[in-house]
Amino acid sequence: MGKLIADLKVWERRMRLREYFFEENEDKENCQNEYSKFKKSSNFTPSPGRERWLDEYVQTIKDEILSRLSRKFKINITTEEEKAMRELLYDESIVIRPSDKSSGVVIMNTEDYRLEVEKELNNNDTYKATDKDLTQKNENKVKKLVENLCKREIIDMKNIYYREEHALEKAIINGQNHPTEKIAEIVENELSENVRSLPTYIKDTTDFLNNLNEIQQPLPENAIMFCLDVTKLYPSVPRKETQEASKTALENRSNISIPTEDVLKMMDLVIEINNFSFNGKHFLQTEGTAIGSHLGMNYACTYLGQWEENLFQNSNLQPYSY
Image (cartoon, rainbow, N blue to C red; front, side):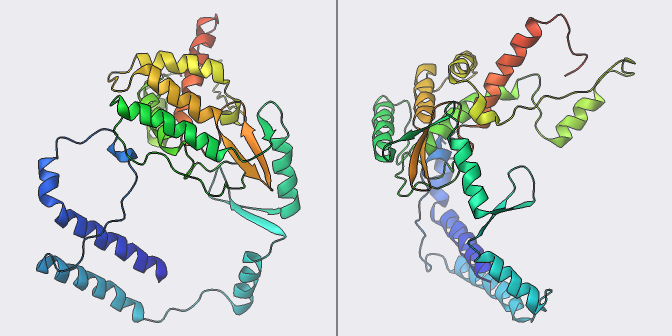
């Protein structure tokens, strides 16, 4: 019920904003900045009373939907099952998380979860401990870079950087509200054109099936189907080689609205100040990019694309199709 009411409020706000900015949107329809999607969202909502017919339409839709909720629904679980679910929800001895790679649910003993995360963080090749929380210091670095780019009119976004009041205690570092969140999105966006052009790029399952249909038949009798998988891809990509591959990709963009040098500055800042905390301790990631960062897929795929190209150039054996 609460979720439905919240969704209705979001819908009502969207309708009122369309009416409020109707004339302005028509004037600016062809003048949208490519990077306006990175701007911080506004909470402004026009008040009712501006347009009578819109008010009646919104109220009618809300009344119609909410009136149907008066019907009684039968709970499809037993009292014992409901009690068990509530006990699991508040059981601090276990950790319940959605699976990273599927729609499943992972349940772990809390102590085992803590030990696994600490084992990962003790990998000196990827993480190092810091004496204090570096968030404020890193936010100042982002602010300085963003103000310089805005002053030079390279970007025109407002409120691009954010303050992370409490670092999230996860091995998979949540990039939401991190000071680098928005500039990470910009860099990832600038690398997207190159990734889509890679020979091994697959958009989705449909794209994969279409590619299979295009393979010349029949296949050679000794043909072997294979795929490559990189363990912990994001933290594994070497930063120096990835920057070199990214520089080449950025210089070949069809639209260099942001100079390559400035994109690389944002990239370096995002990966160099990946700080976070876990169990009261502070850490900094020293290699690759964070799992959960907005600078992720395209950053890693840019490196792998260059790696694949070098592999095939230096090999006498070439794939029949890939």
